[in-house]
Image (cartoon, rainbow, N blue to C red; front, side):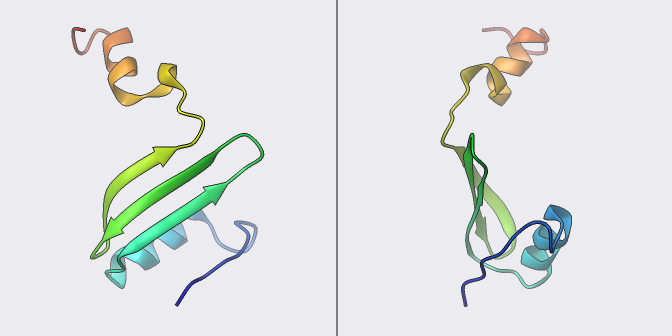
Length: 72
């Protein structure tokens, strides 16, 4: 069953908790005027995340290198 709605009705935390507790598999797409983020779930576990904006400066690897937690 597909769900569609506004985050004014539910918080992201509520939605993620529902997905985890019901062990759902599928995609959750969050849209804003500037970006579309798609989260992938398998049996309630987050297995992927993708942003249409693909801002290289905010990717985890880039942030870890910038903060010197990892080397390039």
